[in-house]
Length: 564
Image (cartoon, rainbow, N blue to C red; front, top):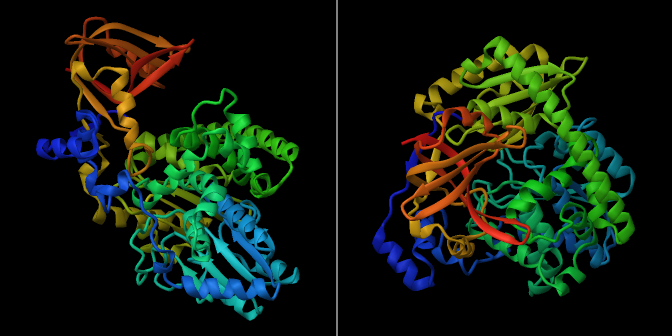
């Protein structure tokens, strides 16, 4: 992204000294921490963590009582999950837990292509025919007002567990558990769907130790995959999950599906980090649901046969490769349409086409938003004129609220501020696009369209060491809401400038003061023509340890580079 505005965070040196003293951390780590403290409800959460009382969630006691009754009467329970990694892990966690308690439990995940997102009436009929009397939704259901009414008519009780934004009217289910409900007193609102399910498990168990050991790796996977902020309670869930990816004893009792997926995606047994889960493991879990049925991913986590789990894991790797090919095709086509119709000149980019794969348009929308730094919605149309869309936004624009303001043109919609899905008739797209852009003009300013790069602090020559990176590990896991720290190096001289991998990546060697360091810009090969030997530059990037042939060397992963 060109023309980024660099924003250097202010440093309170008194606060930095206090943090260094109280937590025995380095100056660099303390600087980063003091710049992020406002993101956390309690500073102690960064290091000590907290799990809140699950009964602070509205309707939790109602849900527990109804599930206990179902267990006592051997009623058939069906878990109704979403088809993304959050929904799949939430489905697996609740199924596994209820099975352990002797429940007669099944699960249902809708097909993304044939059924679309959320609870649907046809699925409710099919579930009823199999004898279910209680449905528990996970990671879905909060906007399914009309569909839930049909469940009541069918004589099925429904407990909704979700974390998405409710609309004005909440479904009239037996119990609705969602921290984002207006009158819910739960202190942390940003749990993933699988996090809400874990709170349900907590409500059944006086001692958390066993459920943490058994289910936290799955909770960790789903939480990271759903890109919720890794702050407060989410931070603790992910930290506890990552700890259980280490050590022989933990590996022995690990879920067979996770073990198979790790063997397939991490053959060199590197340390499992939030970054690895987000960029390597989670896309494989999502692959099946994006191209069709997510049941394959769910079965991998639910099966008790190692060979079967390994077979499914390799199938998911193949499906992910297929997903990447589809993604590239749609992205290329979308950019061509956008440039031809000059859609990028609008405040919100809405682009539609026939035959685009519905499971991939969300990822492509994310790439379009990254490319143009504008909210975008991609819509896939079928032969009957039905459209399914997926949108991504920028930090300054609430996409869910924007869709709410244009709801009369939509058949269905849901999501949150940065990502949303919708259904629309083809003949409504033009007026929807016009109304959406009218809404944007009254809710966005010119500066909102300038990408911002937030920089934690300036680096000094003494900070260029492996120890600097290692000391920051106390602030992990990094992710949404607690991003990997970004540093600035000023007035550095380029002593080497080259490209790698057939010109795709850019590499420079920088000298400043007494320090020398390599900086690598992945997918920045085009910058090579703008910078040459001897240029003095300012760079912004993250610190990273490059391991090759047993050698460990610090490097900067470039976010941006400018002439000084």
